[in-house]
Amino acid sequence: MTSASLASIAAIGLLVLAHLAAEARGAAAARAVSKLGASAGFVLLALLQGPRGPLAGGIVAGLALSVVGDAALLSARRPVFLAGLGAFLLAHVAYALAFAGAGHPAAWAALPVAAATALVVRWLWPHLGSMRLPVLLYALAIGTMLWLALGVGLPLVRLGAALFFASDLAVARDRFVRPGLSNRVVGLPLYYAAQALLALAVGEGRVR
Image (cartoon, rainbow, N blue to C red; front, top):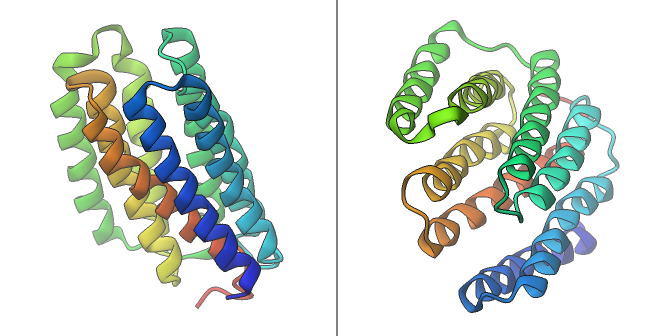
């Protein structure tokens, strides 16, 4: 890993800490700047890797769409939240297409991923109201993305996808079940670690 990549990872980490501190203080401007800075950081990290690997196009597209989603999720307004959800759904589609073309997903892996996704939907269902269909579509997208990622022969991809799935549990809890800073303290580091791992994967010259 190059010194520029290490510097980018360090900057992402510091900006995530700054974002959490801004959340705790209720500082809206600092909250927005730090979060979008951290999100821009994982796009920069991907670009610093080349990008040259077979996963590059799909992952870079997914990262860019994620930045759009991160910007939208800064708002608590329902239409903006739906726009953010749509951006992340498209990001997972981009990731899934990249992983499908670079791996060989095992049929057996579909069962635990489907079971985990179903459990999450069941947990959220009573709290969703009119958001049931959008959340169901999103859950199907991220579950499919995770399954396809598990078929890629790169630990960076498999771990990154798993952390992304886990981070979304915190987002869902915060939005629909029990809002609170603790959700972001858990979810945001998982999310940015996931995106950083996927960003690093774009530099892999071949998929093993």
